[in-house]
Length: 433
View: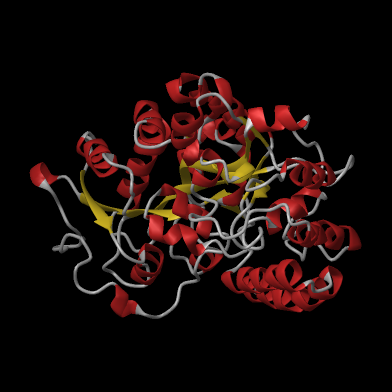
């Protein structure tokens, strides 16, 4: 499921590129000497007044004001001096490499939480105790994604999601109701295709890089089972994936749009009647269409299937190589568990996102009514973690190649699934050894 189109955006929505986050590799030179970490003396860095100094890393967000916000949060912490480093470039690779050295951060964010290789390699610390009685207040799907062997390895910071958005007036004019099943969606897409308008936009690759997961979920499957075994070696799963080929051949999906699915311009400019996109596009949709749009989950395959919306979250992690692990854990807890006003600010004041804690959603002015409120409800009720923790980069790449062959080349889905399974099984054996 290739989603690296987010990389160039340099903001929170890039987390959706991390269906299988990059494994820790060599390339230690990527860290260089400019780590942003204080030079330690006598066993660790200290700030003014005898306080320890903690180094906190963020990737370079695109939303204006975000950097100033996190610096303000850090300055408000009373028990340590927190130095924020804003990291441009390939944040994932440089951060993963830094965890193998003594020059990395104390506290850092990582998309969808740390990788299984970071956890198994002892590079991050267990943060379960930070949650206390708030655990049930965090989005269940996102929290499950950062949990391994009953331990929680990151504190979710803010939720992003993807969903299906449609032009209400176009559906009404064509006599089309919001589709309840995938076949309904295909039929609606055909009926809504007229002249220069296509019925559906799911990316310029026809959904090959975006919708593999939602199609599996629509049929009741996942990449992996709850026991971390290959999750979709089944003819029904093949049927679901084959529906994307059916869409490709229907001539009702938009291909070659000026901007890809992560931008709402195809919908707002009238090139398509329905589009699968991200919550972050809502301000642009509202500006372009007013209230002439509705939202819904990706539909179930059939009556026995499931609706879903992909959700993901950057998670705050603590490096096991920190010389102040206890202090770093205390700061991460203070910011992402205790300081609900900061959490609400971070989610809603710099872009369009959802707080990770469900109790904060009713307090978010941006999510109180209309389409935004419905989207937040979907994220809570049918949100599905973008990928399981043990779904590795190698499995992810092989899956993406498979989806391209199925959707674009017409390869037989069941044959492709059978070829994929040994690759995934070998990766599961490796990470669970």
